[in-house]
Image (cartoon, rainbow, N blue to C red; front, side, top):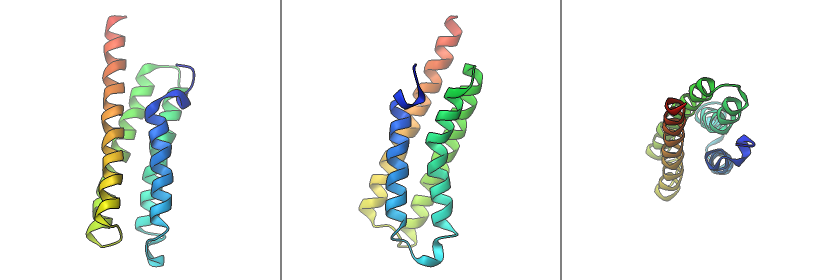
Length: 122
């Protein structure tokens, strides 16, 4: 791997961040320091932890950061559901965001499994 930017999961993470920032601009002003802030931090955490883990010198550390990615993605998924339930997100937008989060979770889980399998062969 040349760079974290080559990873499709990192690219999807950037796409997710942009989508979260765009959609949360429509949330009520009184949520800017509440749900909006939490959603944006969780979203930014996803590609950021992929980048940090990729910049480390060991697979063990990379896997550690990828598990943080899974946690942030699950946190964001919950916040998306809450936003829909509170009427801040339309069902269609919620579904699209949840689909993207689920795709990132699957890709991250596959990457963890691939690294672990590769390490077992060495």
